[in-house]
Length: 392
Image (cartoon, rainbow, N blue to C red; front, side):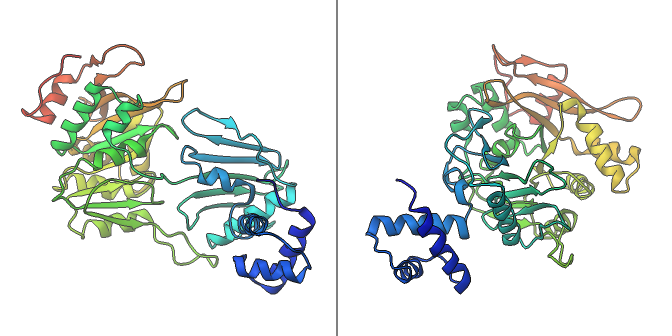
């Protein structure tokens, strides 16, 4: 459908803004009549849709926000909009802004929706929108070529392992192994870079938990979507515009431990909450899990060490706590074809020097069957007698 007349849109928009009215159908119709225009039903609906997107929504980005395949929207200027999804990063054809001021206006509006400030004095914003999307925006002079927006969209719905297998993200042996790990209540740490599918896989694994189990999820932004009958969510709260009222992840993890969780889940471990999570996994809270950003599974101990030491643990204490968890690491990668998949499953083994190493137990190459790693026997022992070694 073609865009309504620009002059009429500007006049109706100005009237609504001046009167402080929301762009509801009745108010838009009244504003159109006040402007002396006569529109049919289809034309009026088009005006309502455009003004709703521009005044309270995401403007030209609205179609991308509704696309179930889009996971990220990146705006580098009025004429440069990119999206990420199953096909990888690509230009969004036919999507552009009228000018730099429209991009700035959208950035300020979204920041205001999140209760944050975005102006010359505070030229960047990192916030969570009411829709669940994660917003990052920067304005000049921090972004000298113009305002830039980044939107990470929440998952539309959780996927199970069977669906991931059909999409090519998991092989049949990987599905059997992951199912066995969940049944054995092994603590799981999913590692990988941004956009490698850690949260998607974790949601699918949590869906396998028994219906009699209570899942308590602690997240900075509600991204996990497990298909499970008993899920309790705790979500961090950023400070308000006065800088007060913050509720951070370490506080929420401590509260979650008092809520009788059968499985404690930290959506993304990236700060002092790692100390509480390690303590929980060492005090009878089996089956806990979380995601950690790392370039390789072998780097997981170093990442945990860095986070724990920054939170006050010594290096020796961090490695002792990590080793005692008996956690299994699942490392996710994203191939050149855009497919997100597990690359390897590792066990955490303590060396003679007291430091923990992530030792590969099963490797999943891009092509060909899975392969046994050095720690395959350790993984089999961790899973228990109910799991038979598959014939890769």
